[in-house]
Amino acid sequence: MGSKNLKAVTATGGKKVEVHDRERMKKVFGSWVKMLKRHPLTGEAMPKYGTGFLLRLMNEHHMLATRNFKHGQFKDFDMVSGQTLAATRLIKNVGCQTCPIHCGRIVEVNGKQVKGPELETLGLLGPNLENSSLDAIISWNHQLDELGLDTMSTGGTIAFAMELQEKGLWDTGLHFGEIANLPQVFEDIAYRRGIGDLLAEGTKRLSARFGGEEFAINVKGLELAAYEPRGAVGQGLGYATANRGGCQLNSGYMVLMEGLGLQMDPYTPRGKAALTILNQNLMEGISASGNCLFPLFTFYPGWLITHQHTMVAKTVNAILPYSGGSTNMLNRAPGKLVPIHLPGLPQTKALSAVTGWRITLGALKEIGERGFNLERLFNLRMGVTAKDDALPKRLTDEPQRPDDPRSRVPLEAMKKEYYAVRGWDSSSGAPSQKKKKQLGLE
Image: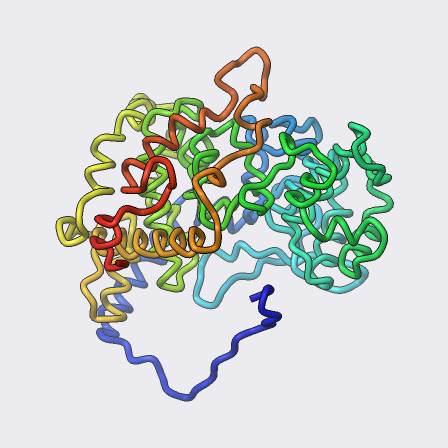
């Protein structure tokens, strides 16, 4: 849209949406809401603390982007956590209509009640800049919203510029831990004044101009979300293969399995390709239906999260890396061969009731796979290649912690398996003719 100077697409009309089976829909929705309220993530953590509740867990598991992703932990992490925001700054919760989660935050800026910062904003404008001022983040979040700038890409770009300054590659006047001048820098980016004119280009283009590609934290030009993938290597594979670039959602959000929900070994590459593909496909299918992705948290049984230290939970988490074979059978199976509904995935029953279509786990997976491959084909047409399914060398070549050689992303090995299961060419990364035919994309 930006390349075409297109600001918005609007639609209007007076016709009501026809629901196929309203009574069944109400029944499914009723049980779904009860499930969300019972689950430890959607029923307790997110309503209480918003998405920012994850920041503490990310720091614990070495997943919190700190100092331009140089580290995975920040000593003052709790000063900017969702729990601290809820205890000291929160005015009230807000949420989408009919949603019981209410993960949105309302805070105060200059006497006005405004939208509060989400997890990614807290992380990328906080620890990633070595900033521990929650008040500053709250104010910047509002300022950037008003300017029309993305808080995540802004935080990532500023952190990169700070490291360029630190290494003597570009004199920006920006330094880690020094924040007094940032509100003016944000204005300069929006109006393309001074160094803001270059910062507005983002991390990838800055690295092409000034160097530092090895620590220019982006994928396909998009700055990464706040999850440091050397603390969750499956998330690293997801970032690299995501069609939108360094996006935590299009990546498959493996961090939820690698420590932020379940306790799967975050460093092993085993099974990560299979699980990443399954997550990407399911999330893509749910996104296509117009649903929020947070209710997908119930896909993971709540008892595995609340009782993670029990023998049963430990056994499940230990087995997960070895589930790649069975998961890939599901990944490769045509949708019609998986005609089931899962208790933790009520989206399929809900969509069936609303549309009258036979949406099962297999159908949802196939819808998602078709969408993901269609995005891939568009990217290929626009010049993206397998070489762009990459991470900065900081994340693949440098261990996050020198005493743990596993704390880096073994991307190439996982990517090879990922391409094979996806049915993509091993050198070009393009979907095969067989795959395109299977998905109706010839």
